[in-house]
Amino acid sequence: MAARSGSSSTRQSRTRRRTASAPLDLGIDLGTTRTVVARADRGNYPVVTFTDTDGDAHEFFPSLTALTADGLVHGFAARAAARRGAPLLRSLKRVLASPTVTAQTPVVLGERTFTVSELLVSYLTTVREQLLRSGALEGADPADEDANIVVAVPAHAYGAQRLITLDAFREAGFHVTAMLNEPSAAGFEYTHRKSQTVSSRRTRVLVYDLGGGTFDTSLVDVRGQSHEVLASRGASDLGGDDLDLLLAQTALAAAGVAEEELTAAQIDDLLDDCRDAKESMAPQTRRLLITVRGHDLVIQAADFYTAATPLIQRSLDTMAPLIGRLDDGGPDLTDIAGIYLVGGASAFPLVPRLLRERFGRRVHRSPYPGASTAIGLAIAADRTATVALTDRLSRGFGVFREAEGGTRTVFDPILSEESIQERADGARGTIITRRYPAVHNIGRYRFVECAGVDDSGEPRGELAPYEDVLFPFDRSLREVEELKAVPVQRLGNGPEVEERYEIDGAGLIRVTLTDLSDGYARTYVLGRRTS
Image 1 (cartoon, rainbow, N blue to C red):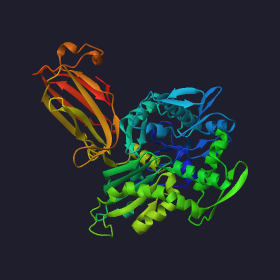
Image 2: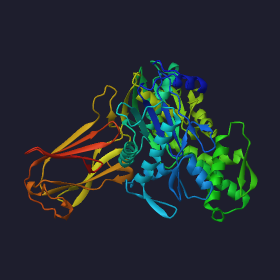
Image 3: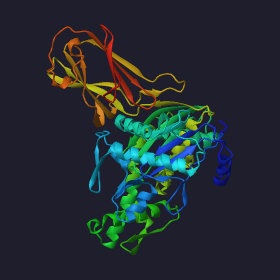
Image 4: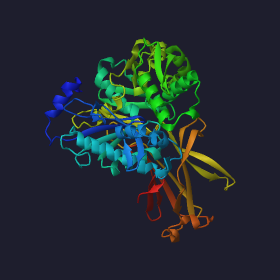
């Protein structure tokens, strides 16, 4: 792959030489704390800059929303509004990660309530407006049908988060052509920069992605231009935000100040101060200076590391099952080309320290850890690149069914976290079918997603239930809009029914129910009927 990187000034000059008619290939990483955008430019992948309220350029757009008298504002404007006392929303992405989230999930901001979908669409619309205003796209519009926009979600994201994110990007005016798992995109960025570490003997890359609000890790097998994700794990409640909060709590304790004594604006300022102090840390840092209510406090770095160790250790514990899958034949980990650290929070010095204790010299940190996923997405969007990806579901999926004549309920595991989501050759992912004679007038399907499926076929981790899907086995009920109001009756011999389950490229599960006696079918995505 002939992809190259250059300095910021070189990248900008190359971008200026592009013509407005050039196709727009863009990668967008919607982060918990920052959104990063990268574009493909003839084998280079420059990060797009955004301008703050003071006119300074940044290679990110803050994932912040504030409520002002004039309505919602986002990004740098939200940060400025919060400092003037406006209610501020941080980490909307963590709300999206809830197993029970829907597009209509309410979020309270100040004295108003919005839906998750409203907030996300409003935020992404502002991102698009900022991109158009910046001139970085040279007249191209992300809404154009010839635009190639690739976005990402955490590898362990449930289907609802994927669907809400995908719908919001499209409603905000982005022509999204693909959705990738975040560590899978980072795997592209690894081979873009570290291809010399991959050989016929060392083909496996372990991606460690610690972002602002989530942790993801994937084991990727690299063979030439083909990347195959062997397995993924993740935690939706672990990230840099937790380190910021921990440092803030440490500072408050040292100052003898209770959190309840601070105003919302003071808490926001303290968290911003802690984040800046954390991000400025280097391995040689010994002290951190934190301001609490106008007073400067010195926090020993060693004390912060001690307090933070359980958080980082949790990420290593999450990654442990992937390490156990390495066919290395010994402690030298001969299959490993590298452990790749990406995500803004991976710059925290304790992270590489603990990883190097385990993996030694094979730990590599992206030179652009906060932009690694966006760059990988831009590589995936690049029409001139030849990379290919085989990804996996990274979560379990099944349905609760009645058994033994309705006397008990059992879980039928249909897909596991190992199920193939998309193949490198462009072929369809995993397809599974079930066929049986219907015995009721209505089929009730209680689909759920879970963190995984254990060896006994039972769901593991949190359950994310879909809304129940009802399918009319009785032909006379096909035109009934509210099947919930119809009593379920056991009729005996009914038509043969087929259930078909297919994972699409975005990691969404498509369910098609068919009456095989006459071909009548309904298709759902995440419990939403599509046909």
